[in-house]
Image (tube, rainbow, N blue to C red; front, side, top):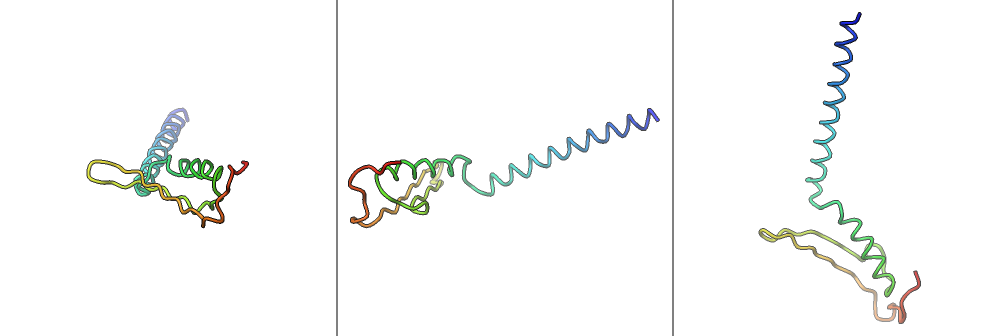
Length: 94
C-alpha cells in the first residue's frame, strides 16, 4: 500500500502542476488576444471620474485605446463632450 500511496501522491502533485501551468498559458493567451494592457480599463474609469468633476458625461463618452505606430505604442484618448448648454458652469460635486 505504501508504494501505491507514493505513486498516487506523486501523480496528484503532477496533475496540480500541469493544471497550474495550463492556467498560466490560458491567462497569457487571454492577455495577448485582448491586445491591451491590464491598466487600460482602470485608466478609463479614472479619466471619467476626473472629467465628471467638470462636465456631465456618460461612461461611453470616454474611449481609451492603445495603438501601435512602428516601434512605439500611442495612447489614444477620446472624450465626446456634450453640447455647449449641457456643460457645467462650476465643477460638478462628486
